[in-house]
Image 1 (cartoon, rainbow, N blue to C red):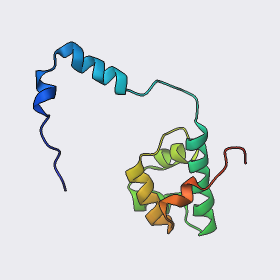
Image 2 (image 1 turned 90 degrees about the vertical axis):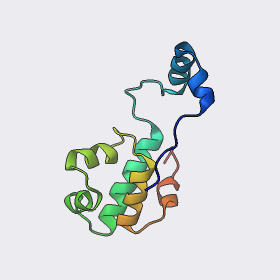
Image 3 (image 1 turned 45 degrees about the horizontal axis):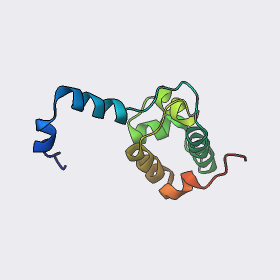
Amino acid sequence: MRIASAPSHSYARQSNDQRAADVTLSAPPPSSRISDVDLCIGRRIVQRRREIGITPTRLCAALGLTLEELRRCETGRTRIQIGLLHGVADALGVRLEYFFNWSPDA
């Protein structure tokens, strides 16, 4: 496992206001709306899981998730992080590209 390096000296020289501005600018805007991308990725997870006959319980066990966490990913209510998506791809026997081969209008 790789350990992150210490903060750079230029960051340490910044004032608290400058650091707060950096954090504010990098924080994603709050949104309760489900994005098309999250929804389509979730649908692709369900589609592939059903194609190969893996139950939600079995997929959860392989990924170390609860059923509720998987359900939120599959319905697009939770934005799935790339590391977890990579694990999902491995568990479902597909490449990452599989989840991005969609059309939002479909």
